[in-house]
Length: 455
Picture 1 (cartoon, rainbow, N blue to C red):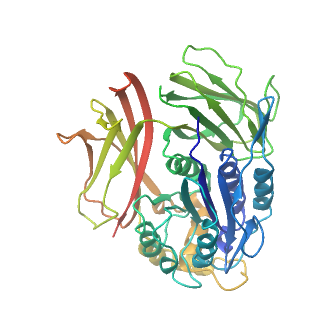
Picture 2: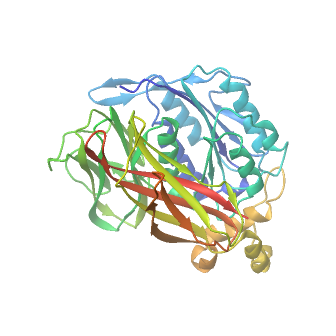
């Protein structure tokens, strides 16, 4: 059973450059993230622009809230989750970006948590441009999981925040459609679980289906599977088949369609929490009818209480045109696992922020931005808005993916070398690890990632 509860405080950036579709998709993903908490977990959510405020729980200095989950007929209900979701739905964007004010609130609330594991989660699309330096506010504990939305970010703040705790992580997700994948990684990292599957899915127009596979290990006591789609008008349906509806079915390793149903069903997503799943290769079948337009979404699976651990060692910062080494080690019950296949996908920028600002100066100046309460947008915010408004017009300022494989070293690690990266910015490496666990004798597969700054 999953017993090691977590205390997590989420800080959501609602500054002016989050207006429109971006903040709406962030709402969807943040609500799905809240619903991933288990009975006994603790949470708080604040939102910030020029200043921060608690949106759940409310008040000047509230205590962190303990989640209570009740189950009836396979359906999970939680008053605390419902209240947090409603609060997230009510947020709107406007103003500048004061990260330090959000951290100040979080520092006070985390003192009221008695959880076994504690974490901060910061979701921001732009640079800090108001208030105290956030690096002076954040302490060494707890770790902070930073979600950076936007093609370009101010590295000096995020890097220093990450360096406060070796468990802290930075996830770069330029497109809000990718944010749920980031939430899946954070969830698995908070509980020291294993991320079994984390894939973006393109739901094609019309009536269609797709299948995603994931491998459940023998030592997993509980598995969480989440399915998210970005247009909330299409609803989940548990049985039958109808237009404008989604259906998620779990198929066991013996090829049988199970009767398992999601315990949580909301507009835009559903979540399965399953105990003691049969070890082996499972499939998640998504089928739908009458989809009016192509739509994005994600399918993620996290296994809890796994004995198999994956660690990545990489420099936090590296210089341009210098090779970068990622070293990955897998172990189970302190025994190093060998004979694995480790494939890598590196997402790297095509241009630097400085280059993009220089080349697009005229376009930025000519673009009319909405007036904001509390001040004007910074150039980085404007650049992100410009790109998100017409990404097809500026493909050279996006990202590209580089594929490769890690090699086994005599010291028991798997090494991947990123050869002489030229463009400054954030590089995110995602590794898929597959093989046989020599301790359990069973196959396993998981996903692990790490980010570095190229200066």
